[in-house]
Length: 469
Ligand code: NAD
Ligand code: UDX
Image (cartoon, rainbow, N blue to C red):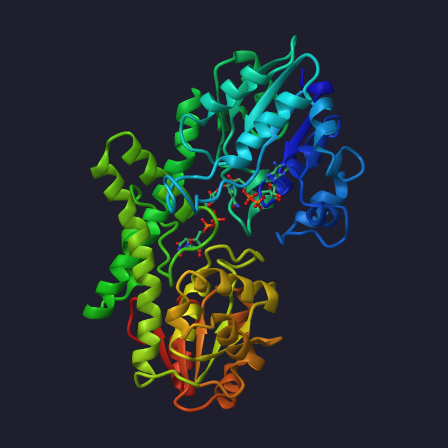
């Protein structure tokens, strides 16, 4: 059945773009069209400068684009022509009304379901939830489709959550730990299994019921984020006791039941998924009358907020309790290395709190520019302008600049805050960095990325996460 398949994906973002590019690359006979209402994004997908940075993505897109991979804003036509339609639109945290600050905003998903019903004029279509959704969303999607379907048109709904991580999207898609497909119709499930089966070993394609699949995505992210918050919690205790959090992490990580991955203490996790998905899980637990379960998971987010605040407080305290009018170089603004994504990056919150203390920030990130930085800061500062003397935009304009290298950012700075673990920060000429800075030359390694003893020898005063330097 897969041979003559035509696929449409609604949503050309961090998930829709790379995922569909990989399907198109691996299945040259399947026509894949990725659609979006954002014209600029579609134009970028059709250009040499893709809208997202992912190592290896350019090559995958170039191999398939124009052959069997297409990017378009013609949503209606693509829906009509496809037998399988992925919904890969954003599902951000609701900012208003019932569940504000916690529940997932499903308006974009519902709009997709209604568009699919409206533009499907014949036959049978398989609708695939690729977006991360609250458990039981498929029920709503099915009802919307059934209630607005044209005569003679029928639908199956599958859940196929995406587990790729940004920065490693191409390798994750090429060799996923598993692909998860939840559904009721065996034929529909088999059709999607046959697509992934072109390159993913069958044993790694798990099939479950719809609700297990939907819930597994939220659960996976909650468990992953929990590991980070757990090691970050221990990092605070390490700082109080002279234990070294990296030594503790490797000591516990050798226990095969715990495992070594995802135990890197940091300035706090970021990204568009972890916080949003945990808050969504918390909301669901409350909705289903499970306040103890909700409180348990909410603590993972609270610990992360604490970790971010703790880092800024430490900077201020170390720098003689004032950073007012001092220049601080911020190295890295993306939420992790190898991505240009800054959504929920810990850097946003650290920079915001440093601006509140009236510091002057010079930021360098190899993939993030000034406009993006300013808009992220304005977004988090607009809620409480009084904290920033009323005019937060002026505060940003006057105190945030960007540099075009890490060294240039450090020029004349009283301190450096390393917030993203970009590889290039490991290879800098730290003698030059030291000479360029004011003294004492404070360096706050929010990722435990650097060789601290070498830096201390050069004269830096180094502060890291969960250890004495
Ligand atoms: P994104 O914001 O990068 O992309 C979503 C795209 O959908 C946007 O370009 C938007 O214009 C488009 N869109 C919204 N409504 C539309 C409509 N009605 N018609 C056409 N296009 C529409 O989001 P993303 O990071 O790709 O995430 C998408 C989903 O995947 C979310 O549910 C997210 O939780 C999930 N997810 C994300 C990641 C990740 O690493 N970013 C990983 C796994 C799962
Ligand atoms: C995550 C999940 O890993 C992925 O499976 C899901 O599909 C989407 O959400 P992503 O947010 O892209 O992926 O990146 P991830 O590698 O999980 O990192 C998330 C955040 O946690 C980053 O800010 C990262 O720096 C931080 N982190 C991760 C740590 O601080 N320590 C770690 O040990 C691991």
